[in-house]
Amino acid sequence: MKNLHLTLYVLFVVTAAIVLLNRYTDFYINDYRVHFFFLFCAVSSFIVIVGHLFKKLSSNQSIIFVFIIVGVLCFLKAFFTWENDWKTQTVLYKNLEDKNKTVNFQMRGRRFSFGYKERVVCVDKLAPFMDWTTDIDTLHIDKSKWERIDLQLNELELPAQK
Image 1 (cartoon, one colour):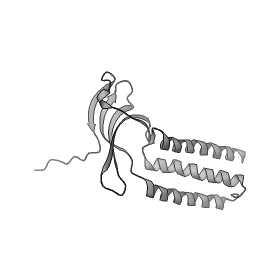
Image 2 (cartoon, rainbow, N blue to C red):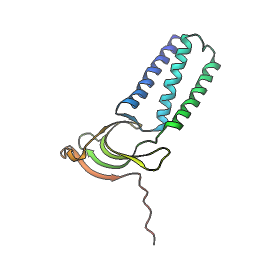
Image 3 (spheres, helix red, strand yellow):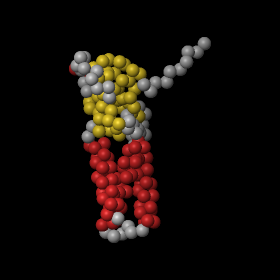
Image 4 (cartoon, rainbow, N blue to C red):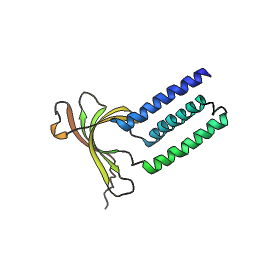
């Protein structure tokens, strides 16, 4: 039982740290499903820890009920506040030394309105679903460290019609 509590504490600390890093730093989770998973784990583990401390969550049914309620609340939070993920439209530059580092032009659809938000950022890939993004000025980029590639992504190319 002690190992379970220790695992729960570690799960809470790791997932809460990832959610807070995503919210307040340049760390970015680029997949909404992964973000939902980390948020769900952080909130549900916190509630189970508090429930164990106050001796209120003792049965498996009550813990499952907490998971269901937290899942529904996380879904509602995501539905009402999610603004789409940033999607890379064009990879402008590639770092010559570090292949995981690129300069991207990204767009994100606005929720409940028409149009897009745009940004140019330096993206350092940490994992398939995690990036470290920093704003970059492409006018003052060091050409000895970056190669211009202008690779178009997320564009629908229609075949030539006869």
